[in-house]
Amino acid sequence: MKKLICFAICAVMLFALCSCGTQKEQAAAEWTREGYFADENNNFLSVTWMEDIDEPGWYVGCMLGEDFIEDSWGGTLPQEGNTLHGTLPSSGSEDDITVTVSEEGEDGLLLEVEGGETYHFTSMGDMTASIIVTINTEGWGMIGYEEGENAPELDPEWPYQSAQVNLGDPATYTFAAAPEEGNVFVKWTKNGEDFSTEPVITVLLDESADFIAVFEEAQN
View (spheres, rainbow, N blue to C red):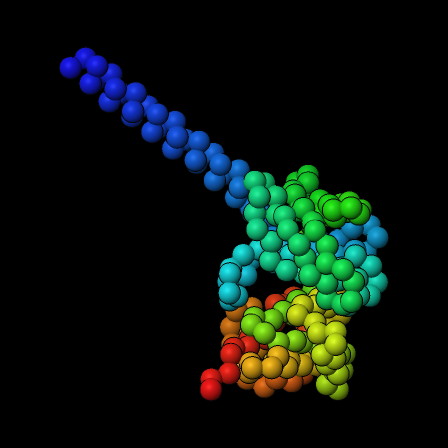
């Protein structure tokens, strides 16, 4: 009977320790820092939680240079411990990059590019002076954008699935979406809400927002 009682006590203690360990691991893996960030060289980084995509997660977009397309990368990254880590597809013709994002200081982020540079970002605060708009796809298709009211040309040889627009002041842009073969365009969403069923839209960008072009397989 003593052995049985001791075994039961040990089992309870072991379960409690395992539970504590699991809680600590979950707490360590919890990511809380999101928003828009910049460094002293005018590189930009955004981290936002995305719900209206195939696999909800943390979307990381970065512009590491002056060209809004060729110097931009973006995609959803999984959490690994206290970091976000994975591969970001290029918005242009550059190679994809593998990055690790970690918290730095009270409100900053550290972006480490595998085989490349390390960037130190600080929060852009309430974004009253800057407008950052991300454009992405859900499903099989491509997108493009152009400042003004003229529709951008979409090149199937260099299809864009994501892009980021950084503005200091409000401006009008035109977005276009086109499905890949065997798919159809469904709609644009803005911040998770239905926005338009037209593939080409002209919008006034006067606030930070996330636009997604949604595609689905054509029904035969």
